[in-house]
Image (cartoon, rainbow, N blue to C red; front, side, top):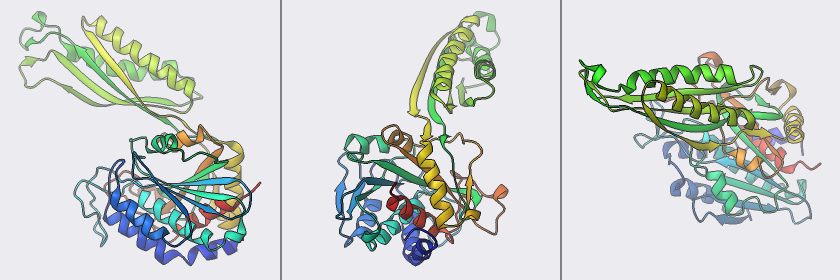
Amino acid sequence: MLGPDLLATAKSFDEGTVELRRAIHHDPELGLQLPSTQKKILDALDGLGMDITLGESTTSVTADLDSGKPGPTILLRGDMDALPLQEDNDIPFKSRHDGRMHACGHDSHVSMLVSAARLLAENKDSFNGKIRFMFQPGEEGFHGAKYMIEEGVLDGVDKAFAIHVFSALEDGLIVSRGGSLMASADRFEITVHGQGGHASAPHQCVDPIPAAAATVTGLHTMVSRSVDPALSGLVTVAHIEAGTTNNVIPPDAFMEGTIRALDEKTRSTLHAGLERVAQNTAQAHGCSCTSEIIPGYPVTVNHVAEANIIGQLASSVVGEEHWMEMPQPVLGAEDFSYVLQHVPGAMAFLGVCPPEIDTSEAAPNHSNLMTISEAKLSHGVALYAAMGMHRD
């Protein structure tokens, strides 16, 4: 069934794909506990003859489709959670919850994966072995994949695949690459400690603000002088807070931000460099410093063989004109990285830019105005199905 016929079959599920996507978009949930989204998934899978396991520490759903014939187990993942963001789109299915929005396309991931499950359940003679559907909460910073791995979602899995939509990619275009696909994402906090006093008498104080300002400059310089220019890494100070009014030198200055890297060696280099710059800059200004790096997601590294499988399947199923190998990774982060540390696999991106909008002008993922085209979600359904059926 691999090939154009699969895409035609996937398109026959369009109505259900869009209906479920809009229902989830209208009722977004955050973090690891998503009971309403879980119920929508369970209702949609009802009657498909799957062996379903619910998460214990999260509201995850794991559904196994067994062909009844010996063979490998292929995992397909779709994440479920929304972002703490106020939606400003004027659409009939706009988020009904203030401060919550599906601004990263996870609503479409769930709906595409459900439609792929329904397609595959109707075509069990097209594959052998099992296909495992991993509906995962908590991708947006809550390490949801890690919880599911600890509860056994990867037990017996031979390969794993995922799709993520991008609102600034051409509608229906599938892209991926072998090797590093997305960055690690660690958070840091630095507090510079001085001695407060009157702003008219700085000589009687130890002002932490100049030390903090020098730290910001030093961190940015450190990156360009510590990381091989052929590699990629960044440190961004995104939040600074110090003082309460115009005539008081505060005792402390606080900053926090993100560290991104595309390989673990660079990640370690940036961690060490941040600690060095923070401590020594504070000391040079007569201050002290406390700093902490809070580990986030590791680098998302596609296995080359599985990334090549995605390219072959995309070209066959949706056409070569809708497939492109990514020229370089992106510095966003993904907790599918945990899955790829355990089993061979790869992630692909699916373009969902509305055709009436130029990709350069599209509201990006994580924007309060992020919107997607639903016209070619069938490309994602077909690719999910093809990845599930593929056997070496």
